[in-house]
Each structure stands twice: as structure tokens, then as C-alpha cells.
Length: 244
View 1 (spheres, one colour):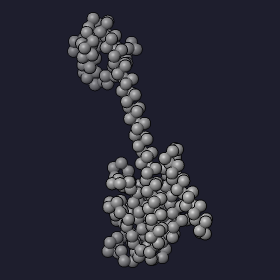
View 2 (cartoon, helix red, strand yellow):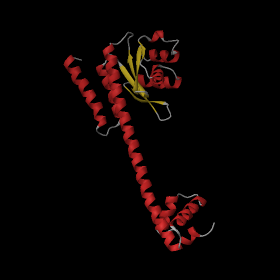
View 3 (cartoon, helix red, strand yellow):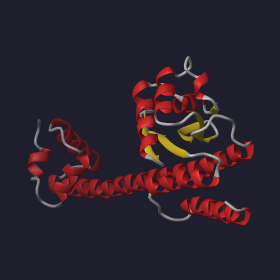
């Protein structure tokens, strides 16, 4: 790629990643584009990417070729390889010559070479102490890749990580907001039910609340649901206020 063309492609890649911070996006499409950018911008022949789930297990998310997909799946099955080591350590893992890694990753090295790759680098998707996956870069020929390419690959992975974690934070905040709003709405219904029960059964508000709690507990029901049914007239006052 000519110098000016590479600069333009590089700028486009970073702008695309930065857009994840201000707009909705498809994570799978984002990561597929990330590995496509890596193959086009870096001195590598193929790339793959794995993400960790909430339980800490790794899953293949994207790959630039069928050969890489098979290697990555084999790596997970064999539980050995540079990607796993990168996620576990949070560091870059370099293997510029897989023929020298037979003792380190015997199964992975044989499989990668069988698929036509003789060198691999794993770059962690990390933000401070949190590692959410790894980007794997493959070459068909042994030998190092430029340090500038490794730095660029890590920078792309880092920005993608920020975008993914930012999206997770937004979803968590939205879920928390919904939970808080639901709690507030439920509290309003509880107060209404206390008032209805206290007025019709001639009780103090505290007494009415304790009866509602007791009824919900005795019948294995949610307090908010019991209160809603009472307010809507689907639950009789005597049923709630009668002795156990």
C-alpha cells in the first residue's frame, strides 16, 4: 500500500473505531472490520479475534479466512496457544517462528503450520487491568514484523476495547436505570395499596404494610405484584387482612 493510501486507510480505521464511542454499532461487524484493517495495514497475512464471555471463557468472534477460523477453534479445543496466553497474562505474545514453539504449544504449532502459517503474534484487548480478548496476527513466512506494525496493531486493539467496554457500560447503566425506575414505580403501587387496605380495613398504615408483606411472603408472591392486584381490585381486602 502506498504511503498516502496507507495513511488514509489508517485514519479511516481509527475514525471508524472512535465512532463506537458516540453512536450505536454492531460489535461483530466492528471486530470483523478490525481484522480486515489489520490484514490491509500491517505486514501480516491473516488475523483472528477472540473475546471473553462473562464467565471468562473465550469464543471466536471473527477471522479473516477459513484457515484462521479452524486454527482458532483448534486453539480453544486444545486449550493452548498464543491467544490464550495473551488473555491470561495481558501481554503481547510473539512467535516469529512456530517451528521453535513445538514444546510450548505442540498442538497449536502443528495445526497452524498445517494451515500454512509459520509465525503468529497475539495482542491483548485490554484496558488497564481488564483483558477482554486477544487479536491474533498470522504470517505465512517466519520472521519478525516491524515494531511500528505491532504498535499500530495494539493501538487498534486498544481503541476497539474501549469501544466495547463503553458499550457494555452504557447497557449496564440502562439496565440499572430501568431497575431503579421499576423500583420507584413499584414503591408507588405499594403506597397506594397500603392506603387502600388501611382505609377499608380500618388499620394504621404500618399495620397495613405488615399485612401486605405477610400475605406476599406466605403465598410466595412478590410484594409489588400483591399490591398491584389489590389496587386494581383483583385481590380482596378480607383475603389480605384475615389472620393466617
